[in-house]
Length: 132
Image (cartoon, rainbow, N blue to C red):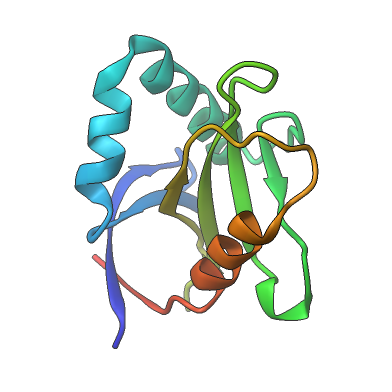
């Protein structure tokens, strides 16, 4: 069954957009409401994506195997809480890059991806979306 995602931001040129997984929307909203830093960092990362820039400190590919192609991580407060939002990048028919914020991982404690992170990345890779 396809999951649903809602577009929340679009680039000025219309070539990139950010969406949120509807099933995890409440979890993400709760995370953002905990601290103003979270929403500010999310806004900064979204700005980088929508401008077509790459910053591996804030938004990085999670390439653990070939099946997980297109899974990215928004990286919040490295060296502190080290939270992640795992995203799936898809290209729509009209060549629009859509970044879907799918799963939240709070307090990543290790530098390499352990089984907990790998399972979450594989889960996100398996999601299929209907964009609204």
